[in-house]
Length: 152
Length: 374
Image (cartoon, rainbow over all chains, first blue to last red; front, side, top):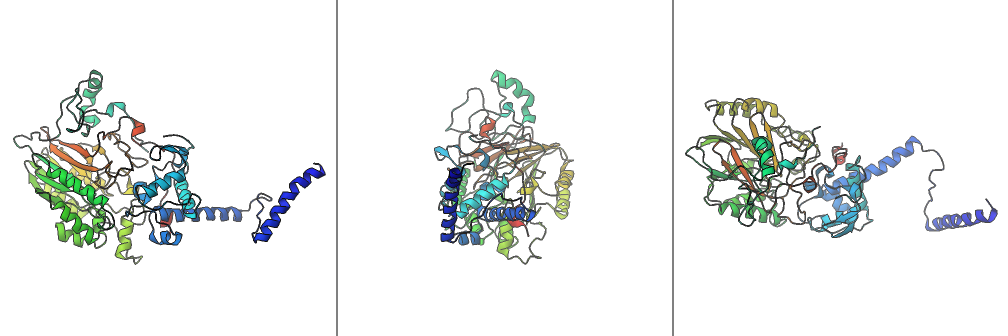
């Protein structure tokens, strides 16, 4: 690799490092060494904690809703009342044309449709913590499913 | 694991009421469930030739004594201040029953009148049902019971199990919900916490709560001891009396004992609620018919749907009157109970698998709730 090529790569990396330093963030370098069992356990714990939070939201847990500042239902209904074990969510089929929304939709858009329409709640920001937790729970509950995007 | 098998021949086409188009080939209704064993041979030829056997669902003769009755269940009422949808649907079912001509001989309310056993919910339900002028019989659901262990329910509706004879049929109402193993005392749960776990269909804390119990089975044996084995018996229960899907308590845990007690009687029909869906099964000579809820429909579980069930259609979650309803039932000349699902839509039974929603995700790995883990 030529020297000027190296510089072309080094400059943005250095800039990013400087930016993170200024912002007070700690840059994390991935895959520079083999994963330890402790690391893998930590990753799993991060994921399962989100699944647990999603499970609570999905089942209408009032304390979790309060903590997450969400209002997922105003009818007393919770997601799990129509989707026990998160069946009939079909996360592996998205994105697809969704009849209710009348457009090509993502799982997150479908989650928001259910919150707003049947549950008469307040929709979530697409990248909010609550949405990611719900998504984690729904995907985890449907693990093993074969990807089949577009299927109706 | 037994998967739902789809058979195109299971689909019966027909009319269901004055608002629907008459199918010139048939007198069967779209809402009438005809199981494969009933007309298997006939349909194989009839479907091809466009000829269906005549079957009427209401007001057919039972000897010299014809009678029909109605079923409503699973209204899951919240206080009116929180949810008026469930109230609207229960009221619609009640108005439909009131409009039946001729009037049914009686109404069975099949449990889960309340959502969380709140006295306000139970009183609201009793008030709504009061409008039905015919004799009413009640069995409890788990949602009615586990806040105060049935005190309010029994105050309003009496004993949770009962029997009477009607026009040559011995009728038994079973309590399948009150004998749940104690999951609350050791954890010092409040009544609300106890009820909350019971009300979570896919929860694991309440465990296998559905059961008939030896004491009640002894009572059933005694009740039937003077009844001829070949005369019709109808058993009403909240839960199915066979092993359908235990993780959601779509069963009673002592179903084998129940079957053993009922086995000598060759014309037993069980009508049950709890599953909120079109459902049919046979074990030996005993037939089981699952009823709709007025509140909302459950999806079919990932496994265990009886192969004799013709699935209901996948319904519109944006229409809260869809996928729910009540039922008209009657004895036939052959001592059989016929039923007609009064779902508030044109087509009740799925015509193809894509419209049924069953078998959509055969690979899903199922686990108990993460949040239930200690």
